[in-house]
Image (tube, rainbow, N blue to C red; front, side, top):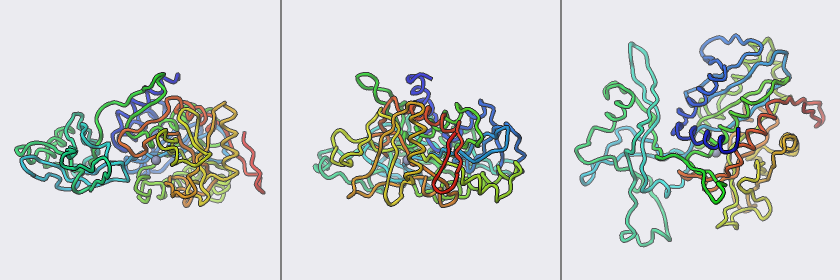
Length: 436
Ligand code: ZN
C-alpha cells in the first residue's frame, strides 16, 4: 500500500469506528475478508493446521491468530486498544432546562474537555433488546448531527482563556433539542436500529464527534482525526498481521477494550482473555499446559499505544533528549518504574526488527520530574508474562477529540509489524535469544 492509500484507509476505518464496538466490528469484517473464521469462547475449539481464526469478547476486544503448518515455537503478539476517552450517556439522560433538552453524561477516561465544545456531535454504542426469549445486542450509530455542547460566552466567563476549568456535571452536558423533543432521545436511538423504544432494555451509548479526519499540511505531512490513540496502532497492527509471512510461531493480534479506564474488565488487558486464548490454542493443537509455558517463554509482545510527540509550542514539556517527532518512525517507550515494559532485551529485539526493514525508531521517556501515563504492556504481563516492548506512533494532543499524528508513521508500523509477525523468537537461556 502507498502512503496516501494507507492514510485514506485509516481515515475510513476511523470514520466507521466511533466506539470500541464499531472498531472491533470493522476489524472483524476485514479478518473475515482475509479468510478468518470466528471462534466462540462458549464452544469447543477444533483448530486446524494452516487455519485462520479470531475470537471476540464483549464485542469490544478481539484476538486473531494463524496456525502454522508445523508445530510451533511460541507466540508473536501485537496488542493495542479499541477504546478512547469520551462521554457516556447516563441512564434516564434527558434533562429539561430553560426550554431545551440536554443529556446527562459522565466521563469515560481522561479527555481534554475543550475540543468537545461547539462542534456537531452524535451518539453511538450498543443497545440490548429481548426478542423471542433471547437478549440481542445491536450496534448503534446515529449518523447525523444530533448534539452540541455550547461554550459559555467570553462575556460571561472573562477568565475562559486564562483559567479554563470544566466541571463534567455542569459544563459538559450536550444540548439535544427543544422542550418538545422530550422523550425523543431513546426514540431516535431505537429508530436507528429499527426497533421500538420500549424494546430497548439497556444501553452503552457514547458521544462522538462528527466529520471525517483529514490529511493536511504544506506537503500533507499530518493526519488528524478522533481516536488516533489507539486506533492508529490497532489499524497498523491489523495490516501488519495480515501482511506477514508464515513462521515457526503463531502470530497473534490482540485488541483490548478499556485501556482508558485501567483495563480491569472482563475484556480488558487485565482480564484472562489473552491467557485463555493462548491456552486454548495450545490445548486444541495438542500441546500440554507445560508445553504452552515453554512456548510463552519463547514469545514476544509488542504493546502498541500512541506516544507523545514533542509539542512545537511546548518543548519544555519533553525530556531534554528523547523527543519523538512525527514522521520520524516508531517510538520505543522507556520508563524506569516499568510503566512501560521495555527493557534492554526487548528494545534490542525490536530495534533489530525495525532496522531489518529500514523502519526508523526513536525513543520516548518522560521528563524525570513528570509522572507519565500507563498502557497495556505491563498490565497484560501480569497475566501472560513474556518479553514485551512498549511502542507507539508520535502524536500531538493525545486525548483530544481531534488528535494529530504523522502521515508517514502508520506505514512504518505496518512494515515493522509485518516483519515482526513473520519471525520467531527462541529463548536460549541466560539472556540469550535468537530471532529468525
Ligand atoms: Zn492509548
